[in-house]
Length: 259
View 1 (tube, rainbow, N blue to C red):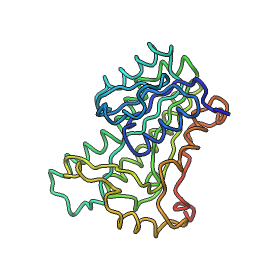
View 2 (cartoon, rainbow, N blue to C red):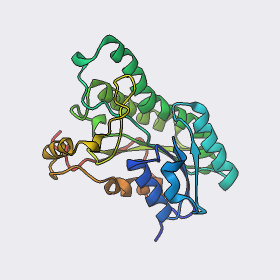
View 3 (tube, rainbow, N blue to C red):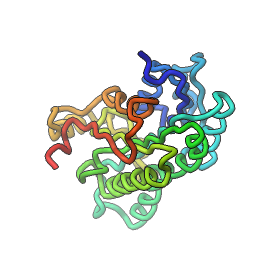
View 4 (cartoon, helix red, strand yellow):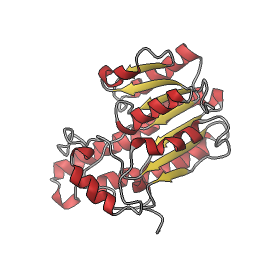
């Protein structure tokens, strides 16, 4: 049974990693998906699917979010789920290793992508989601709940995102449910910020780093993007989680279980 039959969905950060996995799974579940990507070639594998279209832009630009919502309304008559998935990492960059400029600019860029962009996606989609009784889903991290998943800039952004999800759940109730999914370490090409000179780095380009991360996880390995998809499907479905809001569902291989 397709759990998302004809559900109208926007996915940001859809060009790779978890975002691309969301698009793939949601299409398989019968959803109509708009992917927000930086480059059209990132979604060439989906072209030709009548239930798929995309917007090229920067999620740090409010207009990109608004354009995606407008396309959903024009093409499919509305929106049921906004999945604010795009994010950046900091490769465990320690505060004492930053220059003052890296700190100032790196903090701004990290918070812009990991927090402000979620707020912009929420703002741009609220009226459409209210009309459909839909939901907003943000991609968090185990770093929403514990330190150690990155450096102080990344951890600050994810703790802040946890608060955003909680507050929006109150503000948007009872019309729109707001939830999150918190993957643990995942084999993806997530990149860093320009201020920290990390835009050309990808987390999974260093296999030894992934192996080391896996040693600290009870299940003994980092995850694959597909392993988190069931939670997104559950939250986005019409009936699967209709009484769940303000919650972040954790999928981290047991890393936070001892807390």
